[in-house]
Image (cartoon, rainbow, N blue to C red; front, side, top):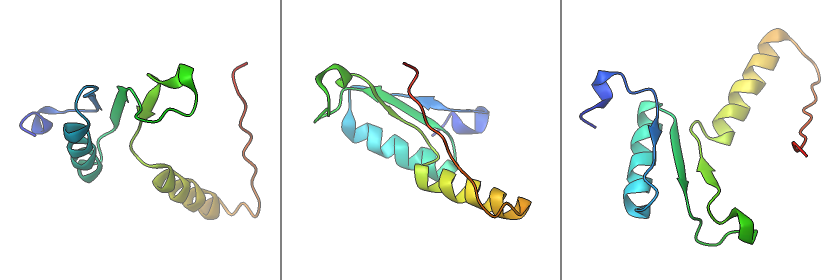
Amino acid sequence: CQILPKGVVSVIGPAASPASGSTISHICGEKEIPHVKIGPEENPKLPYLRFASVTLYPSNEDLSLAIGSMLRSFGYPTTSLVCAKAE
């Protein structure tokens, strides 16, 4: 918290402490600072993704609301989103 006024643009970590990670996520959310948390998942969906957890701020819900607002302001009646894997 003491370094925030010095111009922090994002926070990376912590990977080792889930308790402090949730506190940092909350503070970053309140201050609207991106929080990248990379560390092991408790219950990974796939074994090879055990150390591939990335959490970003803003949340998916906030991003969806922002994109929806932009599209409405541009007057687009319909839109499509195409997602693809890099493979």
